[in-house]
Image: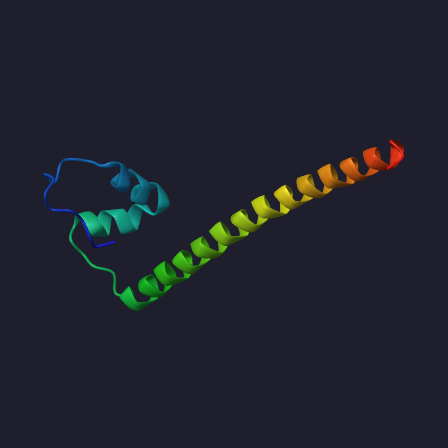
Length: 89
């Protein structure tokens, strides 16, 4: 918020403007008027927390994929083992 790109004419509405408007109409209007937020530290803290959470989510997603691959590998290995037992090996 308060970081509007001035390379666009003021009457151009971008996707980020729509997103900010949908999230909070008042904050969007203040931003369009050039009024900065007074709680910059809280906003920066929230941004940092969201970034940390994003990293956590990506790590958890990767671990979930690894877990599924390990389960598939285990089921395959158990199948091979039981096929060898059934074949008399």
